[in-house]
Image (spheres, rainbow, N blue to C red):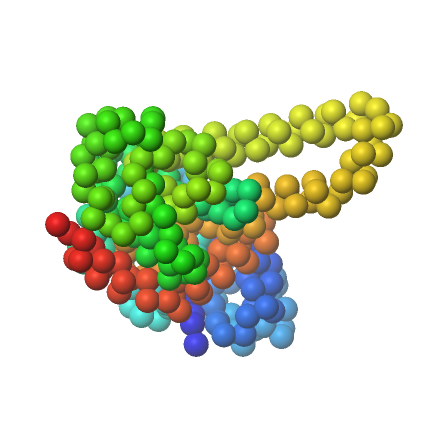
Length: 329
């Protein structure tokens, strides 16, 4: 049975939505148990009696806050993040989920769990909505400076995750650039283009709009560009939602139209809501690590846990190591 280690105190809104999301996941999936790491006196009252036998609590008081430095994470061995990561390192848990300090989670996972053989740097991947599905984008924040070799490794890891965890068949890989032509891009992306040519289903350069139009399944970039793109997309989605709401309130006809289009608006909300995608996997470490949004609600935490379970049940890391070696040249 899969066991998930959860930093139960790390989110912006405390342990309540984290435990609520865990309960939702346990109700739907009976193939896993969890270890919730945090303050026992706060966690225990949140857990219904019927789930006590499936949730173990590892009691600790120290919580790494969002304002703390990620470099301090390795020193704070009694923190919820450190203890949860150690459970995965020791083999007492199969995967780690946290809505807490992402920098701390990345540092601890990389240095305590360790990198997959052949991987230079782990990368954060996230799902972006398209008209008919999703596009996996990486890196979106783990590495602000990358060389061509790193980008090639991201392409390989993204392809494997898309196949083994998201169950995409023969996913297409694109390299994010300022034009589709091979001659476009900076020196790093031009070199990465050449390195990626021997990877199956590499389609070459893609532009920003290709992330959202569904023509490519995996888009590769460095963490600086990826994080800006992610935050921009979140901002645009939020702004569009507010514009629609403001305009709907202006007339009775608009309100009536909105009532008739409730299903359309509901589907749109689901498409752009990060909660529906759960969290972002940190690819390249030896065990599944899922980093959820700090403001995650119960739905987001439930889906983040499902991502961790799917990754733990797959051959993700074995295949990444094999493919890194296979496409090394």
